Length: 70
Figure 1 (cartoon, helix red, strand yellow):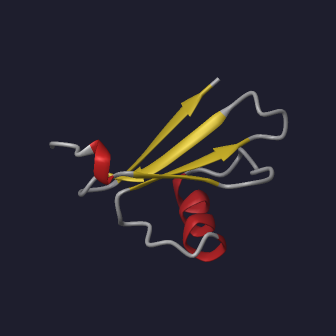
Figure 2: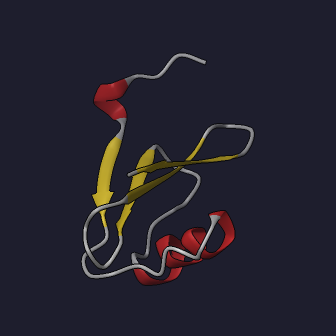
């Protein structure tokens, strides 16, 4: 898959996200709270309470991918 990074938007959710949530829970937040199309070229970013971790959710044309960084 070729990624055109100029076409990818980054969206950081403000506030704290419960990091027990995985793909299903985070995609619901992106769709309902952030009012975004979860199947578009957007990197949805979520932080934990201490801001020591970040999760990035995105649609990869055939499924969701979830990255976590500590």
